[in-house]
Amino acid sequence: MSSVMHRAALFLIAAAGFYLLTLPHAQAQWWKRAPVDFEECADAAEKAATKAEKTSALADCNAKFAGRRKPGGGYSYYDFLQDRTFDIAGPNPTPEEQKKIDQSYTAYLANQRRSNEAAQAMARQQREQQELQLQQLQQVALRTDVERVRVPVPVERPKVQRKGAPCTKGSFSCEWPRLSESLNDLKKLFNPIPSKPAKKS
Image 1: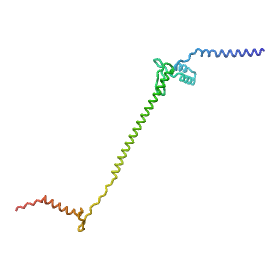
Image 2 (image 1 turned 90 degrees about the vertical axis):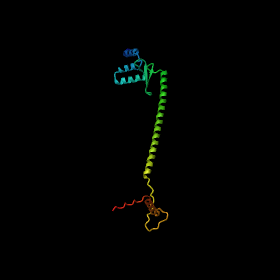
Image 3 (image 1 turned 180 degrees about the vertical axis):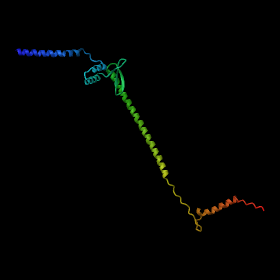
Image 4 (image 1 turned 90 degrees about the horizontal axis):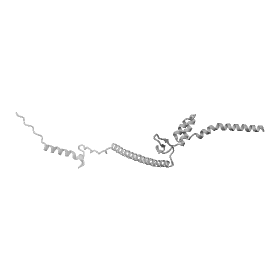
């Protein structure tokens, strides 16, 4: 019976010791106030013993609090999807504030889509103008090349008639000598050669 009592007493002492060891920690947790915003949470995280604990605590702060304190009071929420900051009343957006942020994001996406469509239309128009200009330049270059390559068609020269050879009546080569003589006669008629003055003796 004494051994059973002895064991029971040891168990009670061990349980009481364990309770006393954990009591200060439990009391400390009981009176310790939870952080109200990111900045308080980050200050507590800075006091962590190791770098890994600090990093983990800061990640928890980011998960708990979306807003950041503003210098003049109130909080701001940064939406990285819109690259824009929104004013909010508390450390996290209220459902109404979240609704406004979501509506703003929908409008932002619509504006982005319109801007992209306008940019694509402008790029398409510029591409079409460049293609048209290129076609015009190619046509000008082709015309220039054709004109440069164009060879004059050879014209058959009149055959020179030799003296004594029969000539075809009415042909230029046959009629030219007679016409030339007639022209010379006309020149003499209109431009007579002045006579030389007589020499005085």
